[in-house]
Length: 231
Image (cartoon, rainbow, N blue to C red; front, side, top):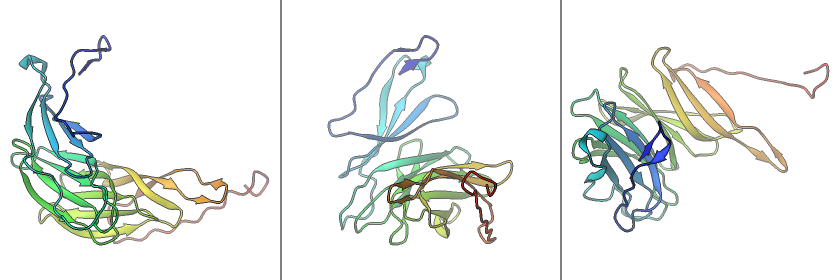
């Protein structure tokens, strides 16, 4: 816990043994609680921390009673690297993206904020591993998952039914979606992706503006030349 006015560390709290490698964190709008995920390969969990200075304590108050993952077969890294919060829906929920590799696709978990009870989980289609980023449209009731695939993919999840409803694939050189951002004013989703590597040439990373309606296709072509009159 860091006081930004003085930029000094005020307190620290260790979690239970084995709770290594934090994955994602978020704070609620009121500033009362923080939510943290761990990236343990065997049993990733969520921790709820009391962070309100008025309470006089900085402590862990709730922990998920069991590991987040649903699938128990196959192998792979079960890291939780992304999380979004929706305080407008009932008691409030957090959605957690879980990366994977090997035989198990990525998963998205719906967890109740008050007591960290896992309400539901969905497993994405085969090959949709590495849920690197999440963005939420609270009004349209959609969740978007940026995937670390080659090329990159973005999966759309209907929050009303909590089901995978659509997927778009990026261009051949637009790999591994790293971050997502949703602008509710314009209904556009923004994705930062990793460039592709060809021999000793590294294509720079890209930021892509993606139309909100996935049914509409947009094609663009660019030729930047070589720094002369053709550029």
